[in-house]
Amino acid sequence: MLAFTRMSDSSSAYRVETTSRLAQWRIDNLASCTYRKSDPFKIGKWNWHLAVEKNRSLLIKLYPEVSSLTKNNPPIASFIIRVVSSLGNRTTLAHPEITDKQIKNNEDFVWALEVPLTGKFIIDVEFIDLKIASPNGEEPCSIWAGGATQRESNATALTALGRMLSESIHTDIVINASDGSIGAHRAILAARSPVFRSMFSHDLKEKELSTVNISDMSSEVCYVFLSYMYGNIQNEVFLSHRLALLQAADKYDISDLKEACHDSLLEDIDAKNVLDRLENAFLYQLPKLKSSCMQYLVKFGKIYDLRDDLNTFLQSADRDLIFDIFHEVLAAWKGF
Image (tube, rainbow, N blue to C red; front, side):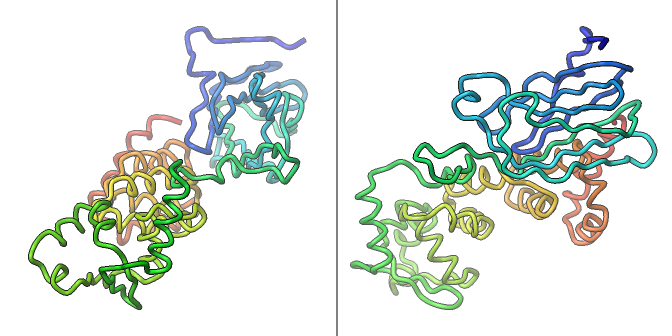
């Protein structure tokens, strides 16, 4: 018979720590023949639970909390789940990647571990994608596919603005990028950027010659940048040029674009991009992105998996950023 235990003095024993797509449940001690279920944690649209059941083997379950959303739109999940033991040299057990699995209840994903685990360990779940069924019977669509960059607005007006740029309708300014030129409109640039407004308001060469030189930007990036200002950018294009757009937004003081880049870069931090994201967060003063990258690296222990990349990164990183990283590591040293 299973013994059901709950430590009333330690609510943290049931709390799952999360970032946008990563969840970790730290278990300090799981007694023999024990069942434990985590508190709910939110990833995507759903509240989730992790559960462990220890009898002859250790069963790990991941499932959404019962709700009308789960009943009507159960998640179709792609994720990687691991168990990291604190004993020895941080032994890691990884389940093969789960792809597009619909999960409705606590029996839809069960991982049976035959390896005995004692002491402290971490259950680590990294969500790659979450989808819901399409109402018209088409392929399931990702809840993360649509970006906040495509604002609800007057479709006709946005289409017209887009045509003004793409068809060079009555342009009155030329943008000279590093490898080409693009016609644009002073009024739109001035309305979207205080830097451009200042250029066109004073007796500068940009005002006299009707040209703006942007030598640090390719014509492709420049056109994407202008497309955002004209309200005519597609999300896929935005995602492909986020870092270049972040640089442009910072240079030309376009706060909504900078915030859009910031929010988007927060959504898909992973081992391949976390160091690059951290450097950009420091360079462009993005506190939420910096905090999330630090959390991913240090609190969630991913720094152990990136030793070689981190050593290379530290050789050229800013001193203040290096100090911040070591400060986070030292602060977490007392923890698990």
